[in-house]
Each structure stands twice: as structure tokens, then as C-alpha cells.
Length: 263
Length: 325
Image: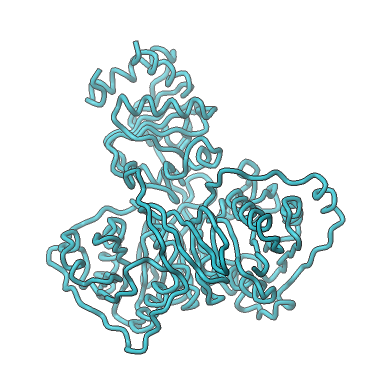
């Protein structure tokens, strides 16, 4: 098997997010970045395949330089090589403009057998980047995957669908987005985390990837925000206040009167 | 630009997915305003079975276009997206829309990248502003909706599950077979080796008459799990907010909201849910809403028909105690 590439994302820690009240975009500088939780499954899957097949794992992330600690976290889990995709020209990218950068970076890393990502990021929640990247690379993609087994030069991939589970056999290379539902996530090794402190990593920008600026970032994004509006809510129903026990009694009575409770 | 709007009709085991019929409702209105034909596109290995599906008889569209080939028996992402991209290039449609099912989420991005066009995710309302199609979805901030548009054609989006109600058309749509060229590449790098049907009934939450939902205001997983006891008494289903799912209190298929399930029950109970718009877009059409929350200013409290201003944990414990005694 050739190397595995894992793409991870730094997302704002939910409680620390501040929103620009005028423009309604995240003030990313204000937030503490964490590893996108669904990406943990991608890293864990890569490490399980590494354990079994001794394959090299390259982890890349696109974002401002403050995602570096998240890449180092991946090194702590067992990644062999770290790549930061960072350039002012990447800022404000929608999923297509993002996928163009990731796909191009993956091209420079050939040969590889597998590209792993999380199902979706918890900030954008589109789930679009893995299949878009696969499509740009002209590779098959599978989303919402529960397990991957490598056997006789092929991958067996278990995916969860809206109807059940499917077992697929696919020739490498391919792109997979992992379901967050894994049974176990290994902790990072302390020794490796210490090693990560002085670790070398590569940074690639638009010029390194030979990508023209007009297809990148906000400018290269075909989807645009026309505006935002606030949904104003006015109190429409009754407000009940008082002792919890009394309120609970009234609550049950209401459920009975409306026919929802038979006892 | 062509005179058509395409909608993806997910056809699995001889049945059209209800989510594909839902998205026809807003697309029909848009297609009438723009005087364009609305086509429902189905990929199948057997045209006969498409014709036999009764739920397609009154589908709200002008035509049902079926691409029939033995290789389309199983859903294979690379082949399906190649077929759909080809159709999109033939028709040059004004728009190409998908339900936000797992198939839709797997296909739409592949096609958008192939065509080099924009794609909006989990759109829950469509509106024409002059010539421009505005796609709406909740965004960061309290009760904030973003209005998005695409600069490229076809305009592409996945539409949030349950955001629209299925409506029947007044006439039966024409079912037509669409033939691909003789030399079309039907190959795939994927092979489906086995399938296991889920033991759980699909989307029970989305059709539940009673939904008992919980948020972080319940303070612990242990408290959240008590909702299942209450749901039993009310013959309902348990739903959750996004933070609850991410905290691991319950599985993500119980998530109500923009990237989860939309519900329209007769009764919705919200325990310790403040009502972030990412959640409320998935339950705002509930017939009767009861919110239990300490915060009088919470959006869900304002939306509720009855708001109980109290600690959700305490109220839940009291009612379970009374129900058991």
C-alpha cells in the first residue's frame, strides 16, 4: 500500500466563537481552534491501517498558521509528515475553492492509496469537501464510512447509508469521509507530543501549488453571501412560573387534557 | 440557458425516497415563476419498476426522466455522478437540486466539482429576488439566516430534509426514458459486495406524533437518557440538539435541525433547549410546543405555546416520579 493522506481542519471551539454582529461571520481570530471532532475518526482509521500495514501517514490542513498545534496533535497520534496549506489567497474560500487547494496538494503527494477526511466540519457542516476533492482528482469517493480494511491490493469499505450498511470493494486510490461513530480513539503519545515541539513541517501556498489566485479564496468561490437577516421572535404563548413541583403537576395535567397522556 | 430545472430522484429498492418528493414543492414554485420545466431525474436498472411506484404517480413535476441501465442497480458514487454530470451537460439546466440525504450529499459535491460550479448545503428556503435565486440557511449567530446565491449555472444545492412538505400534482407526470450515447462509460471502480438493512425503522423521528427533545440544559447524559422513559409514556420519540449529539449523550441520528432531521409532531417538548436557529428550523412547524427552560429570553421559550420557566432537570424528575407512582 502507498501512503495515506489525512486532511484535517481546525475549527473554532464552540463556546469560544464570537460572531461579527454586523457581518455575521465568525471572528476566527477570537476563537480557540480545536481539531474538528469528526476528523478524529479519520486520524484513528489512518493509524489503525498504519499499525497493520506499516504505511506512511501524511497529515495536511488548510488554514491560518494557528492551526499548527492541531497538526502537531496529529503527529502525537502517529502521523509521519505534516503539511500546512496556508496563504492569504486561500481566505474566504467556499467548498469548491477549498477543494481545489486540497486536491492540488494531494496531487503533489502522489503516489498514495487513500485520502481520509471527517464526514463534515462542525463549523460549516456541509460535508462537501471530501467528494468535491475526489471529483477534482477523478477518484472514487465514499462518505459516512464506518470501517476500512485493506486486502489483496483492494479496500473493503463499510459505509452507513440511509437504508443500512453496505460493504464495498474499491481499487485504490480513493477518498473516504469517515463517520464520527468509531468505537475507540487512541490518545496521543506524550513522547511524540514532546518531539512535535521542534518538528519540521512544510508550508505550501498558492505559488508552491501553482494555483492561479482567481480560482482561490473568496474571489474564486462561486457561492456568495447576498446578506443576512435576523428572525425576530415575539412571545406567542403562555409563560408559567412558580415552584417546580407545582409546574410539573400543571404540565402533566396539560398533557392529559390534550390527550397525549393516557394515565 | 436551458428551460429546465433538474431534481434528483433517489430511487432505492423500487421506491422513490420521500425526501426527493419533498424538494419538488419549492422547485415547482420556482419553475412556474421562471417558466421552466421541472424534471425529476431517476437512475435505475428497471424502468418498469419506476413506472410501478405509486408515489411517483402524482409527483409535482412536468416530467420524470429515467436513465435505465443494468449497471445502475447499485448506488455507486463514481458512476452515478458521471451519469448525472453527463445529463447536466446535455440539458444546461438553470438549476440542479438534491435532497440532503446521504446519497444527495455524496453525489451533489462530485457533480458540482465536475462542472466547476457552486454548491450550497442544507438549504431550507428558496426565494426569487428578481432574476436571482436566493438560497437560505441558518448561519452563525442567534437566529441569523444567511441568504446565499450562486454565480454559476446550474445553480446547485442540497435541500434540508423535512424542510418542505410534499404536495401532489394535479396531473400525472410523463415518464420518459433518457438514453445515453452508445459509447458511454458505464465502468465503476466500486463494487457493492454486501448490504445489510438497518434494524431500526428509518426516520421514525421525522414522522413521530410526539417528540421529546433535550438540550445541554439537562446538564448530564444521565438526565438526557431519562427522556426515553418519558417518551415511552407519551408514545413519542426522543430528539436532541446538535451540542447534545456532539457531547456524546445520544447518537447523531436523533439530531433535530439544519443538518439533522426536521420534525412536525402534534406535540414537541423541549427540555433545557434554548433554541438556536440550527435546531429550531427543524421543529418550528410543530403543532404544539412546550419549552422547559430557566431563561425567559430563550428563543424556544418565545416560540412555545406554553413555556415553563424552571430547571428542566427538576421538572423532568418530578413528572417521571409522578408518572411512576
